[in-house]
Length: 400
Ligand SMILES: Cc1cc2nc3c(=O)[nH]c(=O)nc-3n(C[C@H](O)[C@H](O)[C@H](O)COP(=O)(O)OP(=O)(O)OC[C@H]3O[C@@H](n4cnc5c(N)ncnc54)[C@H](O)[C@@H]3O)c2cc1C
Image (cartoon, rainbow, N blue to C red; front, side):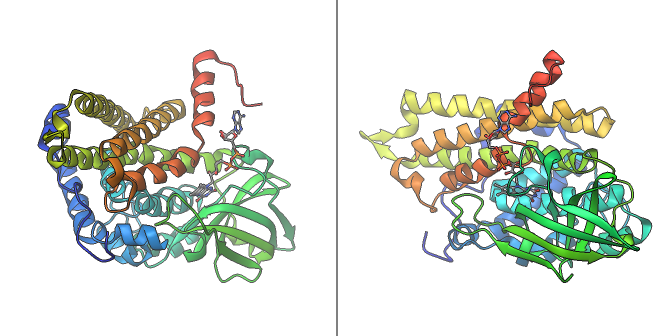
Protein backbone atom coordinates (compact mmCIF):
# COMPACT_ATOMS: atom_id res chain seq x y z
CA UNK A 1 0.00 0.00 0.00
CA UNK A 2 1.30 3.47 -0.77
CA UNK A 3 2.34 4.92 2.56
CA UNK A 4 -0.32 6.97 4.30
CA UNK A 5 -3.09 5.90 1.93
CA UNK A 6 -6.54 4.74 2.94
CA UNK A 7 -7.54 1.62 4.83
CA UNK A 8 -6.23 -1.75 3.59
CA UNK A 9 -8.60 -3.35 1.11
CA UNK A 10 -11.05 -5.99 2.18
CA UNK A 11 -10.97 -5.48 5.92
CA UNK A 12 -12.55 -3.38 8.65
CA UNK A 13 -16.21 -3.88 7.87
CA UNK A 14 -17.97 -6.76 9.63
CA UNK A 15 -19.09 -9.33 7.07
CA UNK A 16 -22.83 -9.96 7.47
CA UNK A 17 -22.62 -13.66 6.60
CA UNK A 18 -19.81 -14.25 9.07
CA UNK A 19 -21.62 -12.30 11.79
CA UNK A 20 -24.87 -14.21 11.21
CA UNK A 21 -23.14 -17.59 11.22
CA UNK A 22 -22.45 -17.36 14.93
CA UNK A 23 -24.66 -14.49 16.15
CA UNK A 24 -22.38 -13.87 19.11
CA UNK A 25 -24.41 -10.75 19.88
CA UNK A 26 -27.06 -13.00 21.37
CA UNK A 27 -24.57 -13.78 24.18
CA UNK A 28 -23.60 -10.16 24.87
CA UNK A 29 -25.07 -7.48 27.13
CA UNK A 30 -25.75 -3.98 25.81
CA UNK A 31 -22.72 -2.69 27.73
CA UNK A 32 -20.48 -5.34 26.18
CA UNK A 33 -21.72 -4.51 22.69
CA UNK A 34 -21.11 -0.81 23.29
CA UNK A 35 -17.53 -1.40 24.45
CA UNK A 36 -16.89 -3.61 21.43
CA UNK A 37 -18.28 -0.99 19.06
CA UNK A 38 -16.29 1.81 20.69
CA UNK A 39 -13.01 -0.08 20.30
CA UNK A 40 -13.88 -1.24 16.77
CA UNK A 41 -14.62 2.34 15.72
CA UNK A 42 -11.38 3.55 17.31
CA UNK A 43 -9.35 0.92 15.45
CA UNK A 44 -11.09 1.80 12.17
CA UNK A 45 -10.40 5.51 12.58
CA UNK A 46 -7.00 5.62 14.26
CA UNK A 47 -5.23 2.35 13.48
CA UNK A 48 -6.30 0.89 10.13
CA UNK A 49 -5.28 3.87 8.02
CA UNK A 50 -1.69 3.65 9.31
CA UNK A 51 -1.01 0.16 10.55
CA UNK A 52 0.57 -1.16 7.35
CA UNK A 53 3.02 1.74 7.42
CA UNK A 54 3.77 1.21 11.13
CA UNK A 55 4.36 -2.48 10.47
CA UNK A 56 6.70 -1.80 7.54
CA UNK A 57 8.60 0.91 9.41
CA UNK A 58 8.73 -0.98 12.73
CA UNK A 59 6.86 1.71 14.67
CA UNK A 60 5.10 0.88 17.95
CA UNK A 61 1.68 2.43 18.72
CA UNK A 62 3.20 4.49 21.57
CA UNK A 63 1.62 7.69 20.26
CA UNK A 64 -1.85 6.22 20.87
CA UNK A 65 -1.21 5.75 24.61
CA UNK A 66 -3.10 8.88 25.67
CA UNK A 67 -6.17 8.00 23.61
CA UNK A 68 -6.12 4.38 24.78
CA UNK A 69 -5.91 5.66 28.35
CA UNK A 70 -8.76 8.13 27.87
CA UNK A 71 -10.90 5.27 26.52
CA UNK A 72 -10.16 3.28 29.69
CA UNK A 73 -8.45 0.43 27.84
CA UNK A 74 -5.39 0.17 30.12
CA UNK A 75 -6.11 -2.18 33.00
CA UNK A 76 -9.77 -1.97 32.05
CA UNK A 77 -10.81 -5.03 34.07
CA UNK A 78 -9.03 -3.77 37.21
CA UNK A 79 -10.80 -1.70 39.85
CA UNK A 80 -9.79 1.57 41.52
CA UNK A 81 -6.88 3.90 40.69
CA UNK A 82 -8.69 5.26 37.62
CA UNK A 83 -9.19 1.82 36.04
CA UNK A 84 -12.47 1.16 34.22
CA UNK A 85 -13.44 -1.92 36.26
CA UNK A 86 -15.30 -3.72 33.44
CA UNK A 87 -16.05 -7.41 33.42
CA UNK A 88 -13.65 -9.91 31.87
CA UNK A 89 -15.76 -10.47 28.74
CA UNK A 90 -15.65 -6.74 27.96
CA UNK A 91 -11.88 -6.79 28.36
CA UNK A 92 -11.72 -9.80 26.03
CA UNK A 93 -13.88 -8.10 23.41
CA UNK A 94 -11.65 -5.02 23.54
CA UNK A 95 -8.60 -7.26 22.99
CA UNK A 96 -10.38 -8.88 20.04
CA UNK A 97 -11.09 -5.55 18.38
CA UNK A 98 -7.57 -4.26 19.02
CA UNK A 99 -6.00 -7.39 17.57
CA UNK A 100 -8.29 -7.18 14.53
CA UNK A 101 -6.23 -4.02 13.93
CA UNK A 102 -2.86 -5.57 14.77
CA UNK A 103 -1.42 -7.97 17.34
CA UNK A 104 1.20 -5.32 18.16
CA UNK A 105 -1.50 -2.94 19.31
CA UNK A 106 -3.18 -5.60 21.44
CA UNK A 107 0.23 -6.54 22.87
CA UNK A 108 0.85 -2.91 23.81
CA UNK A 109 -2.43 -2.80 25.75
CA UNK A 110 -2.04 -6.32 27.20
CA UNK A 111 1.45 -5.70 28.54
CA UNK A 112 0.44 -2.37 30.02
CA UNK A 113 -2.76 -3.64 31.66
CA UNK A 114 -2.37 -7.35 32.31
CA UNK A 115 1.35 -7.57 33.03
CA UNK A 116 2.65 -4.22 34.26
CA UNK A 117 -0.48 -2.81 35.93
CA UNK A 118 -1.78 -6.17 37.12
CA UNK A 119 1.55 -6.99 38.81
CA UNK A 120 1.34 -3.71 40.76
CA UNK A 121 -2.43 -3.94 41.38
CA UNK A 122 -2.23 -7.51 42.66
CA UNK A 123 1.12 -7.60 44.45
CA UNK A 124 2.12 -3.96 45.07
CA UNK A 125 2.17 -1.91 48.27
CA UNK A 126 -0.35 0.92 48.78
CA UNK A 127 2.39 3.43 47.89
CA UNK A 128 3.42 1.58 44.72
CA UNK A 129 -0.21 1.41 43.57
CA UNK A 130 -0.77 5.09 44.24
CA UNK A 131 2.46 6.09 42.53
CA UNK A 132 2.03 4.12 39.32
CA UNK A 133 -1.49 2.84 38.63
CA UNK A 134 -3.31 6.14 37.92
CA UNK A 135 -0.58 7.28 35.51
CA UNK A 136 -0.42 3.90 33.80
CA UNK A 137 -4.23 3.83 33.49
CA UNK A 138 -4.23 7.24 31.81
CA UNK A 139 -1.42 6.23 29.46
CA UNK A 140 0.82 8.97 30.85
CA UNK A 141 3.33 6.32 31.88
CA UNK A 142 4.20 3.07 30.08
CA UNK A 143 5.02 -0.19 31.82
CA UNK A 144 6.83 -3.38 30.82
CA UNK A 145 7.29 -6.82 32.35
CA UNK A 146 10.66 -8.53 32.45
CA UNK A 147 10.56 -12.27 33.07
CA UNK A 148 12.25 -13.94 30.06
CA UNK A 149 16.04 -14.03 29.90
CA UNK A 150 18.40 -14.77 27.00
CA UNK A 151 19.00 -18.30 28.33
CA UNK A 152 15.65 -18.98 30.00
CA UNK A 153 12.32 -18.58 28.22
CA UNK A 154 10.03 -21.56 28.77
CA UNK A 155 11.91 -22.32 32.00
CA UNK A 156 11.79 -19.03 33.93
CA UNK A 157 12.35 -20.80 37.26
CA UNK A 158 16.02 -21.12 36.24
CA UNK A 159 16.45 -17.35 35.78
CA UNK A 160 19.86 -15.84 36.60
CA UNK A 161 18.88 -12.24 37.33
CA UNK A 162 19.66 -11.66 41.01
CA UNK A 163 18.57 -9.21 43.65
CA UNK A 164 20.85 -8.96 46.67
CA UNK A 165 20.26 -7.01 49.89
CA UNK A 166 22.73 -4.21 50.67
CA UNK A 167 21.64 -2.47 53.86
CA UNK A 168 18.09 -1.26 53.23
CA UNK A 169 18.60 -1.35 49.46
CA UNK A 170 18.35 -4.03 46.81
CA UNK A 171 20.98 -4.40 44.09
CA UNK A 172 19.82 -6.09 40.87
CA UNK A 173 22.05 -7.59 38.21
CA UNK A 174 21.25 -9.64 35.14
CA UNK A 175 19.50 -9.33 31.81
CA UNK A 176 16.05 -9.80 30.31
CA UNK A 177 15.20 -10.55 26.69
CA UNK A 178 12.22 -10.07 24.35
CA UNK A 179 10.57 -7.48 26.57
CA UNK A 180 7.56 -5.78 24.99
CA UNK A 181 7.54 -1.99 25.53
CA UNK A 182 11.02 -2.30 27.14
CA UNK A 183 12.70 0.81 25.73
CA UNK A 184 9.55 2.98 25.87
CA UNK A 185 8.63 2.03 29.44
CA UNK A 186 8.76 4.38 32.41
CA UNK A 187 8.66 1.49 34.85
CA UNK A 188 9.69 -2.15 34.49
CA UNK A 189 8.38 -4.98 36.63
CA UNK A 190 11.52 -7.11 36.87
CA UNK A 191 11.52 -10.62 38.30
CA UNK A 192 14.73 -11.67 40.05
CA UNK A 193 16.09 -14.46 42.19
CA UNK A 194 16.68 -13.61 45.89
CA UNK A 195 17.67 -15.62 48.95
CA UNK A 196 13.96 -15.84 49.54
CA UNK A 197 13.06 -17.18 46.07
CA UNK A 198 11.81 -15.24 43.02
CA UNK A 199 10.54 -11.75 43.81
CA UNK A 200 9.28 -8.82 41.73
CA UNK A 201 10.78 -5.29 41.69
CA UNK A 202 9.62 -2.01 40.21
CA UNK A 203 12.49 -0.41 38.32
CA UNK A 204 11.95 3.18 37.08
CA UNK A 205 13.56 3.51 33.65
CA UNK A 206 15.95 6.28 34.68
CA UNK A 207 17.61 4.22 37.42
CA UNK A 208 21.43 4.14 36.98
CA UNK A 209 22.60 0.79 35.60
CA UNK A 210 19.28 0.05 33.87
CA UNK A 211 19.35 0.13 30.05
CA UNK A 212 17.01 -1.07 27.32
CA UNK A 213 17.99 -1.72 23.71
CA UNK A 214 15.61 -2.72 20.95
CA UNK A 215 15.51 -5.97 19.00
CA UNK A 216 15.73 -5.18 15.28
CA UNK A 217 15.10 -7.17 12.08
CA UNK A 218 11.87 -8.72 13.38
CA UNK A 219 9.63 -10.39 10.80
CA UNK A 220 6.73 -10.53 13.26
CA UNK A 221 5.04 -8.04 15.60
CA UNK A 222 6.85 -5.22 13.86
CA UNK A 223 4.37 -2.61 15.10
CA UNK A 224 5.52 -3.28 18.65
CA UNK A 225 8.64 -2.42 20.61
CA UNK A 226 10.62 -5.49 21.73
CA UNK A 227 13.71 -4.90 23.85
CA UNK A 228 16.54 -6.42 25.81
CA UNK A 229 16.95 -5.09 29.36
CA UNK A 230 20.34 -4.91 31.08
CA UNK A 231 20.56 -4.55 34.86
CA UNK A 232 24.08 -3.64 35.88
CA UNK A 233 24.17 -3.29 39.67
CA UNK A 234 20.88 -1.41 39.70
CA UNK A 235 20.39 -0.03 43.21
CA UNK A 236 16.79 0.25 44.40
CA UNK A 237 15.28 1.20 47.76
CA UNK A 238 13.75 -1.58 49.87
CA UNK A 239 10.33 -0.22 48.94
CA UNK A 240 10.86 -1.24 45.27
CA UNK A 241 10.00 -4.88 45.96
CA UNK A 242 6.43 -6.03 45.28
CA UNK A 243 5.49 -7.28 48.76
CA UNK A 244 2.64 -9.58 47.66
CA UNK A 245 4.48 -11.76 45.13
CA UNK A 246 6.51 -14.74 46.34
CA UNK A 247 7.94 -17.35 44.00
CA UNK A 248 7.05 -18.08 40.40
CA UNK A 249 3.33 -17.91 41.14
CA UNK A 250 3.74 -14.10 41.09
CA UNK A 251 4.70 -13.72 37.42
CA UNK A 252 2.57 -16.70 36.39
CA UNK A 253 -0.49 -15.01 37.90
CA UNK A 254 0.16 -12.00 35.65
CA UNK A 255 0.76 -14.18 32.59
CA UNK A 256 -2.61 -15.84 33.08
CA UNK A 257 -4.26 -12.42 32.88
CA UNK A 258 -2.50 -11.64 29.61
CA UNK A 259 -3.17 -15.10 28.19
CA UNK A 260 -6.86 -14.57 28.80
CA UNK A 261 -6.77 -11.47 26.58
CA UNK A 262 -4.95 -13.44 23.88
CA UNK A 263 -7.74 -16.05 23.78
CA UNK A 264 -10.07 -13.31 22.53
CA UNK A 265 -7.43 -11.27 20.71
CA UNK A 266 -6.32 -14.06 18.39
CA UNK A 267 -9.89 -14.37 17.15
CA UNK A 268 -9.78 -10.69 16.21
CA UNK A 269 -6.81 -11.28 13.91
CA UNK A 270 -8.62 -14.33 12.50
CA UNK A 271 -11.80 -12.35 11.87
CA UNK A 272 -9.91 -9.63 10.04
CA UNK A 273 -8.30 -12.24 7.77
CA UNK A 274 -11.66 -13.87 7.08
CA UNK A 275 -13.34 -10.58 6.27
CA UNK A 276 -10.49 -9.66 3.99
CA UNK A 277 -10.60 -13.03 2.19
CA UNK A 278 -14.39 -12.94 1.85
CA UNK A 279 -14.33 -9.46 0.35
CA UNK A 280 -11.48 -10.35 -2.00
CA UNK A 281 -13.04 -13.64 -3.13
CA UNK A 282 -16.28 -11.85 -3.97
CA UNK A 283 -14.61 -9.43 -6.36
CA UNK A 284 -11.63 -11.31 -7.78
CA UNK A 285 -12.64 -12.86 -11.12
CA UNK A 286 -10.81 -15.81 -12.66
CA UNK A 287 -12.08 -18.12 -15.39
CA UNK A 288 -14.93 -15.66 -15.88
CA UNK A 289 -16.42 -15.79 -12.37
CA UNK A 290 -15.66 -14.61 -8.85
CA UNK A 291 -13.29 -17.01 -7.10
CA UNK A 292 -15.85 -17.09 -4.23
CA UNK A 293 -17.98 -19.25 -6.54
CA UNK A 294 -15.41 -22.07 -6.73
CA UNK A 295 -16.09 -24.99 -4.43
CA UNK A 296 -12.48 -25.17 -3.26
CA UNK A 297 -12.60 -21.51 -2.19
CA UNK A 298 -15.89 -22.08 -0.39
CA UNK A 299 -14.44 -25.11 1.41
CA UNK A 300 -11.58 -22.95 2.67
CA UNK A 301 -13.97 -20.19 3.73
CA UNK A 302 -16.39 -22.59 5.41
CA UNK A 303 -13.67 -24.46 7.33
CA UNK A 304 -11.90 -21.31 8.51
CA UNK A 305 -15.19 -19.62 9.45
CA UNK A 306 -16.13 -22.67 11.55
CA UNK A 307 -12.82 -22.57 13.41
CA UNK A 308 -13.32 -18.85 14.01
CA UNK A 309 -16.83 -19.47 15.37
CA UNK A 310 -15.62 -22.29 17.63
CA UNK A 311 -12.74 -20.16 18.90
CA UNK A 312 -15.03 -17.24 19.61
CA UNK A 313 -17.46 -19.48 21.50
CA UNK A 314 -14.58 -20.92 23.51
CA UNK A 315 -13.39 -17.40 24.34
CA UNK A 316 -16.89 -16.38 25.42
CA UNK A 317 -17.28 -19.48 27.58
CA UNK A 318 -13.94 -18.90 29.29
CA UNK A 319 -14.78 -15.20 29.67
CA UNK A 320 -18.01 -16.02 31.47
CA UNK A 321 -16.07 -18.47 33.66
CA UNK A 322 -13.55 -15.73 34.52
CA UNK A 323 -16.37 -13.40 35.46
CA UNK A 324 -17.87 -16.17 37.61
CA UNK A 325 -14.48 -16.68 39.30
CA UNK A 326 -14.17 -20.31 38.17
CA UNK A 327 -11.60 -20.06 35.36
CA UNK A 328 -8.60 -22.36 35.92
CA UNK A 329 -5.02 -22.08 34.56
CA UNK A 330 -5.40 -25.26 32.51
CA UNK A 331 -8.55 -23.85 30.90
CA UNK A 332 -6.58 -20.72 30.00
CA UNK A 333 -3.86 -22.92 28.50
CA UNK A 334 -6.45 -24.81 26.45
CA UNK A 335 -7.96 -21.54 25.20
CA UNK A 336 -4.64 -19.89 24.34
CA UNK A 337 -3.33 -23.02 22.62
CA UNK A 338 -6.45 -23.58 20.53
CA UNK A 339 -7.25 -20.04 19.55
CA UNK A 340 -3.76 -18.91 18.56
CA UNK A 341 -3.06 -22.14 16.70
CA UNK A 342 -6.34 -21.90 14.81
CA UNK A 343 -5.93 -18.18 14.15
CA UNK A 344 -2.57 -18.81 12.42
CA UNK A 345 -4.14 -21.55 10.33
CA UNK A 346 -7.03 -19.26 9.40
CA UNK A 347 -4.63 -16.45 8.46
CA UNK A 348 -2.51 -18.76 6.29
CA UNK A 349 -5.52 -20.25 4.51
CA UNK A 350 -7.00 -16.81 3.91
CA UNK A 351 -3.65 -15.74 2.49
CA UNK A 352 -3.95 -18.43 -0.19
CA UNK A 353 -7.37 -17.05 -1.20
CA UNK A 354 -5.76 -13.70 -1.92
CA UNK A 355 -3.14 -15.28 -4.16
CA UNK A 356 -0.22 -12.97 -4.92
CA UNK A 357 -2.05 -9.99 -3.42
CA UNK A 358 -1.94 -11.80 -0.10
CA UNK A 359 1.80 -11.40 0.33
CA UNK A 360 1.90 -7.60 0.57
CA UNK A 361 0.89 -5.20 3.33
CA UNK A 362 -1.89 -3.91 1.06
CA UNK A 363 -4.02 -6.58 2.69
CA UNK A 364 -3.74 -7.50 6.37
CA UNK A 365 -3.62 -11.30 6.16
CA UNK A 366 0.11 -12.06 6.01
CA UNK A 367 0.80 -9.30 8.54
CA UNK A 368 -1.62 -11.04 10.91
CA UNK A 369 -0.13 -14.48 10.14
CA UNK A 370 3.39 -13.21 10.84
CA UNK A 371 2.27 -11.45 14.02
CA UNK A 372 0.58 -14.59 15.26
CA UNK A 373 3.94 -16.40 15.14
CA UNK A 374 4.96 -14.23 18.10
CA UNK A 375 1.63 -14.70 19.82
CA UNK A 376 2.06 -18.47 19.46
CA UNK A 377 5.42 -18.19 21.22
CA UNK A 378 4.97 -15.57 23.93
CA UNK A 379 2.98 -16.01 27.14
CA UNK A 380 3.94 -19.70 26.98
CA UNK A 381 4.71 -21.46 23.70
CA UNK A 382 2.16 -23.76 22.11
CA UNK A 383 4.27 -26.73 23.26
CA UNK A 384 4.26 -25.49 26.86
CA UNK A 385 0.48 -25.14 26.77
CA UNK A 386 0.18 -28.62 25.26
CA UNK A 387 2.17 -29.85 28.26
CA UNK A 388 -0.10 -27.94 30.63
CA UNK A 389 -3.19 -29.51 29.07
CA UNK A 390 -1.44 -32.88 29.03
CA UNK A 391 -0.69 -32.57 32.73
CA UNK A 392 -4.31 -31.62 33.45
CA UNK A 393 -5.46 -34.73 31.58
CA UNK A 394 -2.94 -37.25 32.91
CA UNK A 395 -1.84 -35.83 36.23
CA UNK A 396 1.78 -36.27 35.03
CA UNK A 397 4.13 -33.33 34.44
CA UNK A 398 6.18 -33.83 31.26
CA UNK A 399 8.07 -30.51 31.40
CA UNK A 400 11.40 -31.95 32.50
C1 LIG B 1 7.60 -10.50 20.24
C2 LIG B 1 7.82 -11.08 21.60
C3 LIG B 1 7.45 -10.36 22.73
C4 LIG B 1 7.69 -10.87 24.01
N1 LIG B 1 7.35 -10.11 25.12
C5 LIG B 1 7.76 -10.54 26.35
C6 LIG B 1 7.57 -9.71 27.51
O1 LIG B 1 7.01 -8.61 27.43
N2 LIG B 1 8.06 -10.15 28.71
C7 LIG B 1 8.69 -11.35 28.84
O2 LIG B 1 9.11 -11.67 29.95
N3 LIG B 1 8.85 -12.17 27.76
C8 LIG B 1 8.41 -11.79 26.54
N4 LIG B 1 8.61 -12.60 25.43
C9 LIG B 1 9.32 -13.85 25.60
C10 LIG B 1 8.50 -15.11 25.40
O3 LIG B 1 7.63 -15.28 26.49
C11 LIG B 1 9.46 -16.28 25.17
O4 LIG B 1 9.99 -16.10 23.88
C12 LIG B 1 8.80 -17.62 25.32
O5 LIG B 1 8.47 -17.90 26.65
C13 LIG B 1 9.68 -18.76 24.79
O6 LIG B 1 10.96 -18.66 25.31
P1 LIG B 1 12.23 -18.76 24.33
O7 LIG B 1 12.02 -17.83 23.20
O8 LIG B 1 13.43 -18.62 25.15
O9 LIG B 1 12.14 -20.22 23.71
P2 LIG B 1 12.62 -21.57 24.43
O10 LIG B 1 12.05 -21.66 25.80
O11 LIG B 1 14.08 -21.72 24.25
O12 LIG B 1 11.87 -22.65 23.52
C14 LIG B 1 12.34 -23.04 22.21
C15 LIG B 1 11.46 -24.20 21.74
O13 LIG B 1 11.60 -25.31 22.66
C16 LIG B 1 10.32 -25.70 23.12
N5 LIG B 1 10.40 -26.20 24.49
C17 LIG B 1 10.97 -25.60 25.58
N6 LIG B 1 10.82 -26.36 26.67
C18 LIG B 1 10.14 -27.47 26.27
C19 LIG B 1 9.67 -28.64 26.94
N7 LIG B 1 9.83 -28.83 28.25
N8 LIG B 1 9.02 -29.56 26.21
C20 LIG B 1 8.80 -29.38 24.89
N9 LIG B 1 9.23 -28.31 24.20
C21 LIG B 1 9.88 -27.37 24.88
C22 LIG B 1 9.47 -24.45 23.04
O14 LIG B 1 8.09 -24.74 23.04
C23 LIG B 1 9.97 -23.86 21.74
O15 LIG B 1 9.35 -24.51 20.67
C24 LIG B 1 8.30 -12.14 24.15
C25 LIG B 1 8.64 -12.88 23.01
C26 LIG B 1 8.40 -12.36 21.75
C27 LIG B 1 8.81 -13.17 20.55
